[in-house]
View 1 (cartoon, rainbow, N blue to C red):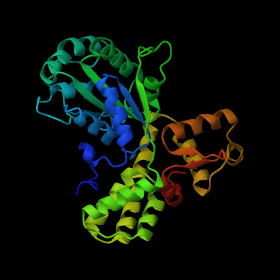
View 2 (view 1 turned 135 degrees about the vertical axis):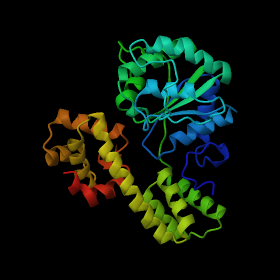
View 3 (view 1 turned 90 degrees about the vertical axis):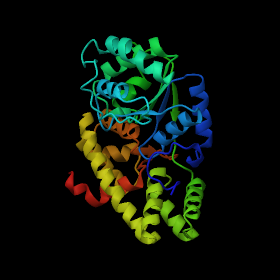
View 4 (view 1 turned 60 degrees about the vertical axis):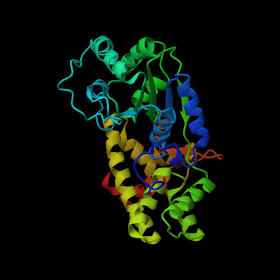
Length: 344
């Protein structure tokens, strides 16, 4: 199983439907540009980043902020691992590293340990994955600015995430930010078009010598709506269960559990979860314009604008050509409709 493997792809041959984005990212990395990949979860940002680094023939280092929200500890873990490690998770402990978390971490880290790492790898391509979960935005941008200023020719970051928290501080730094004036390339990764989703399902099932007729493929696409992560999960389940109906049902149930956990997790970011849930509840019924949302929610215009902006940056809602807001992930919509009583 290759196309329907649910782990992030690192082989460019398996990065379906992202040829243009891959070429653009590789071009930026060859110029040693730091790149920010923006987009909702399950859109394929990590796979795109890993495939781009592979195409350059370089080692892949991944710091996953979902596993450890302390950027300094995560980077220390990267520096502490053996040279042969290709993928580094941030939960790796750092008891034997000389770097301490504190106000002087930037100078000590860069001077003593990063030099040692670069002697081994030559040029480090580091994926800072789902960076919105990192704590202490000020310290994160201080360290990134230091690395940018003194190690730009030796370290390239690909930062993925939704544009809230730390990511917002990186993408849109204020004049007083240590990152202000540092050029970074932003790439927004979109969901697949209808035809690409169907092509992916066809290619994946043919690879496994499974049958998926056009009617069922359309049903799967309608339910999962162009999100590569959910479509891949369906393919994986189909490969295991051999029945497309059971696989789709299983995928929807799994997806709602994953979404439920994510909804709980956003509370950690301190962004007003109950109010966001209230808006998602309203939108789970049908798309609405701003005025309709204001009437249904009771929020004043200033608060409503702020909450809608947050939901958009999280990748949870979009606005269509008629100015109506809608839930962008169909599995989120189903979860809200089925289970919202648990979070009211």
